[in-house]
Amino acid sequence: MQLQRAEGEIGPPIQMSGTYPITFVAVKLPAFLEKEFARQNALVALVSYPVSVKGFFYRLWSYRNAFMTKEGGGKQVGPLIVAATWNSRLDPSLDEPSGIAWFGYTLAFVILMAVVATVIWQSKNSRQDAAIRKRNRKPVLIDLPSDLSGNFSGMPDVDPESPPSVDRDP
Image (cartoon, rainbow, N blue to C red):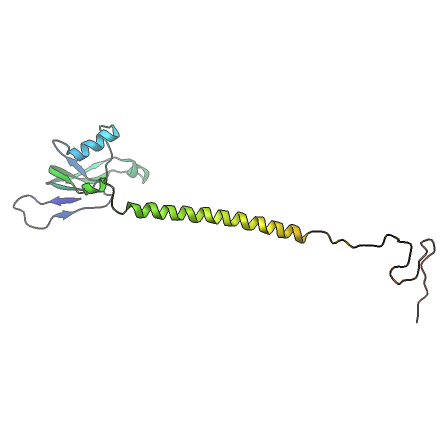
């Protein structure tokens, strides 16, 4: 917000900004604020809007608010300014679509396509990994001769009914 000094006063405009509450008193609201009140459908509205004001500082006044109650009580102190005229400092061309909006849409599209490509790549790789794991887990089959009664390993025949031998070569 920029406060203009009164006619004949010397010095640059007073700059005030931030979240410090300022109260303005005026006979009539400017059109840009009337639109805001109509949009909110309210008689009293919290408005955060950059303005340039011609007026004068009337006094500091105190009032109760939720912030000070939450912080332990007391009253909020803020300047009361009587406004002669005030103007919006928002650029009216901001309501019109800008020439670089395509960049934001393009960037959003590229990011979306990267996410989709990552999901497709991940699902393809997980299917391939599952196929490799399945292939590696196949049991190994050993072909045994159909006649198991013969000596196929070069070992002597062992009678399953006889006790094992305890003879050992020294």
